[in-house]
Amino acid sequence: MIELYFHPSPNPLKVALLLEETGLPYQVVPIDTRAGEQHLASFRAINPNGKTPAMLDDDVRLFDSTAMMLYLAEKAGRFLPVNDLVRKAELYSWLMLVATGIGPYCGQAVHFKHFAPAPQEYAVNRYDFEAWRHWKLINERLGQQAYMTDEYSIVDMSVWGWARVIPFVLGPQAFEQLPHVKRLLDEINARPAAQAAEAIKGRFAFKAEVDEDARKHLFPQNARLHAG
Ligand SMILES: N[C@@H](CCC(=O)N[C@@H](CS)C(=O)NCC(=O)O)C(=O)O
Image (cartoon, rainbow, N blue to C red; front, side, top):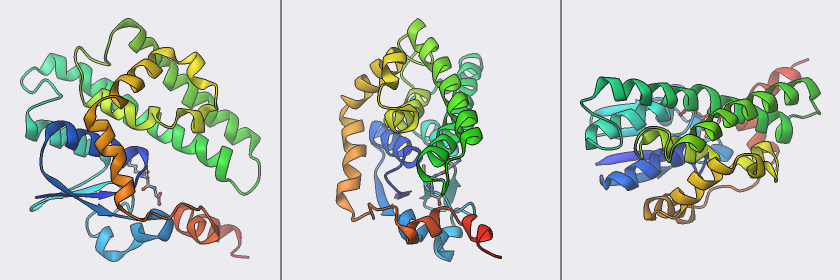
């Protein structure tokens, strides 16, 4: 049985969406990152990077959400063109753009806008600019075709994970400039698989506050600022 080590955040949610879409049986193991569970030795044994998601499929262990997207799509034989290297090349390219562009730049934009201890104009400008630049690439692509590749795939699911939080990342009016992203988000949100993935959160008591203790777990680098 697959075990998904999960927190209700963009990267774990896109894997939950794919699991729901494939119908593969899985269990959720909650990892409350605001309570510091990502740093437990038992979790680090599965994901040495100490981030969610992680996964066990019997003896197979996986960390990094994009590795899981590829593994699960190959396993299910769906949501990527299994035997077509040319179509796969297109899918890999967009998938990695989401993994290395959307995820990290949105994450850093959120950090410097919402969580940095003091306003960081230079950092906010840099990450907001890059987050917007990547989202405009996705929006342009989705203005030309229904999905990121020639059919609904793990790329669209990866986009969905982060598109859900665009107002928090880019501002409350951001979708006005990203109408094609909003169209895909609404379409995927209407799928039963997305609703099932979103509902996982309600089955567990994840810590909601980002208080002093949560900041210690999420931003361990801050300890160096106060080290004297
Ligand atoms: N490249 C990793 C990034 C994972 C990641 O940053 N996960 C976030 C949730 S979206 C997390 O666990 N944050 C808690 C922490 O950094 O301690 C992936 O795609 O899985």
